[in-house]
Amino acid sequence: MPTKPASLIIIGLTIMTIYGVDYIGAHIVPTASAHFFGVPILQNKTVGNYKIIFQPYPLIPVAGNNSTQINLSVLDEEGKNINIMFASLSIKQKETGDIVKTFPFRLYEFSDMTFPYTFTKSGTYVVTLNSKINGDPVYSETPLVVDFDLPVRSDSLLALFGDLMIYMTPPLIGIAGLAIYLRIKKKI
Image (cartoon, rainbow, N blue to C red):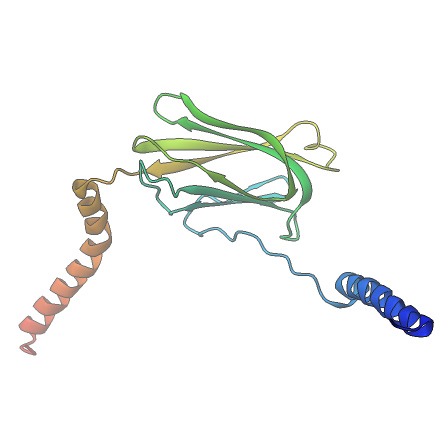
């Protein structure tokens, strides 16, 4: 059984450890902030003072693939996440305008959001983000609304061949052109 002074020392060290870790975490150690960066070829948009990053995974979703994630981030004018915001997402077919999925408004601690969704058919979809931004004079009551087009491909071999041809045709043309040029110059 520890003596009374030893018990007080243990209690004191415990209290100092608890409050010390909290103090160091809040005041000394720099905080980290991360968010989605978006692929430059996609439709990242700016509305008012906010930049909306759109980063689906995979880049072009495949119909029937249950690992699809629609990642969005709303950043302020300094490129930082927004704390405490409400957001909803709707997905509709572009050709018909039919809404296929609605994620209702919910509270997000940070402005990075991920919506998992399995597309049932290939085609082009419109992803609409509605964001109510806490403390913003315009967007705290009336949501900031932004649309993104999202192509969804089928998983057929024909679709895979088409995608392969899109990426392989330019390099193959370049290689063929180089071979013809070298043949004319009698280098090969």
